[in-house]
Length: 194
Image 1 (cartoon, rainbow, N blue to C red):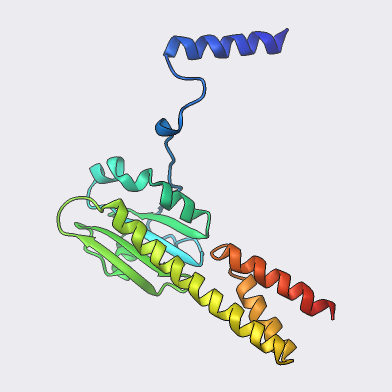
Image 2 (cartoon, one colour):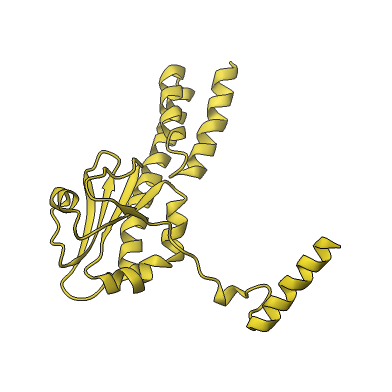
């Protein structure tokens, strides 16, 4: 009885608000899991880190970067999404950023800057920020493919230990390169069963 009553209330609430019980694909909104960095706090450790320094409070509230489906998908591939506040002077100084300009910086896990995008006026275009991240992930994917090929050659020539080490390095990148990691895992199973 209680479940029926709860379901009836939910249906009534949806009907009264005029909302569709199941949103259609076009009205679906995806939010990027941005983490606001507190001043003086080190960024989270991740293989790739995307730093966003908004040029204004308005940009932080209305930017396309908040709801980019591509960026949300890249966040699942171990890309940390970090918002740097304009009053976080240590981080802004370490990134060499003008806090009055909207800026996106892509860095690797060691903090080395891989790419930078700055806007003189206005907000960062989401498509350009997505391109920065996509290019970095594509580079890693290409390198992982090359490592797989080299490991396969090592295994074929009898250098089993070297092949295993190379496959393990690819496996360690499983979050960013899931397809290559699966191939490496299969190869490791074959080599370690011998």
